[in-house]
Image (cartoon, rainbow, N blue to C red; front, side):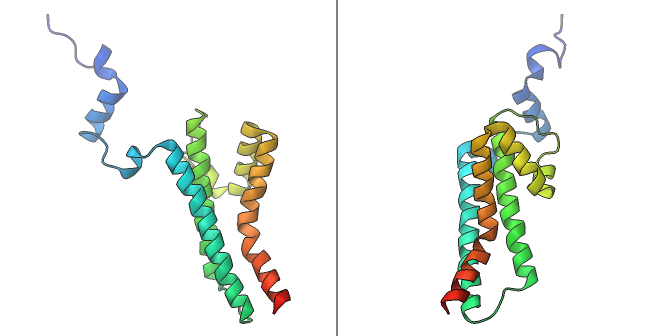
Length: 149
């Protein structure tokens, strides 16, 4: 008797991924731990905010302002990094994400408070406040440099 292929142990997820991908994943993100992805996305968002705030403060000290495209790109990068953190955190907590992060990115200011409050309650409000602070940090630095100079 010949065993039937595709039944029992052959349908294990690892065997399925090997069959679909023709071997182990070559993606550098596949080898990264969940904690390191979360840490890198948060540190990246904070780093981008601090660098852009310093740039905005320098421009403000010279009575200039960053262009609209630069500000849009800054906000897009910060949203992408914070949405990455939300998606990875949801996967770590084994919460269903049906859109692979699309809503976390496109509807960030609606989805982020919903997710954070539903998973962390009071701490979620504080975390979202920190996220908002990342977006207003350049304006705070601009106000500070305008009042000093």
